[in-house]
Amino acid sequence: MTQPATTSGRQGEAPGGARMVVAMGGVGLIAAVLLVVTFQATAPYIAQNRADFLERALAEVLPEATRRVAFTRTPDDRLVPVMAQDKEGFRLYAGYDELGALVGVAVEAQGQGFQDVLRILYGYAPDCQCVVGMKVLESKETPGLGDKIEHDAAFRANFEALDVRLAPDQARLLHPVEPVKKGSKAQPWQVEAITGATISSKAIAAIIDQSAEAVVPLIHKNLSQLREER
Image (tube, rainbow, N blue to C red; front, top):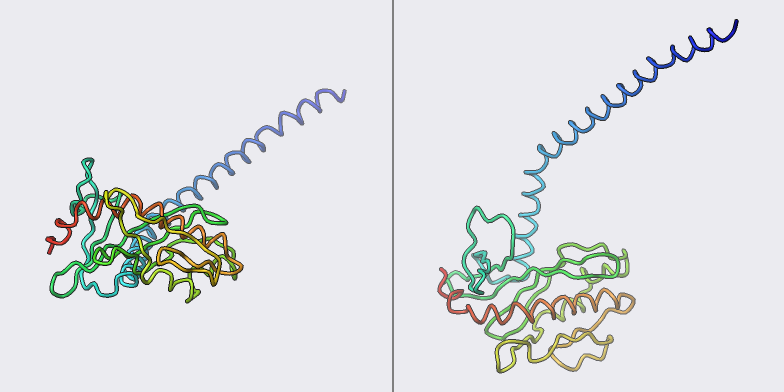
């Protein structure tokens, strides 16, 4: 006598379960649409904020430049101005003064920090063959310790005239950028680390060393082109 009732009860449960699945699917669809709409609405503002931040960083590492031109690298290692349609890829930013003279080149570089990838921008002056400024673009280093690479004045002073001269063959650095303990810097190609943030300090030195080893020869190979760009 009770078996038909049990069967009937189970059959009655199916529509409720189906309605729950449909409802959850509807909520998920609405959430997905809202995410897409929000992304599309905010993307231009995010892109503009990034562009503004990059402009400020460029002004910081090449303060004498009143105008900048972005260059990209061709497969045969020539540097050519970036076209408007080129959204991604290798970038160098040549800075020029009011008279149109080349004052330096800003270079983006990245590498592994203590917590995550570090992205930096540094300025390079061909006349002295030295790094003349450094700005951290992206960092997730430990607050109060690793993030001192962004704010410590003594550490930032390492990059006011950091020697990255080329060897006579013009294909590599004469001296690698070398991190040293605080108070022991004796050479212009050395970077004095921050006490308590040694790993992050060494990471910045390594990033600049690896980047300069590849980019500085490229800059000098194309120096006449960079100087002539007005």
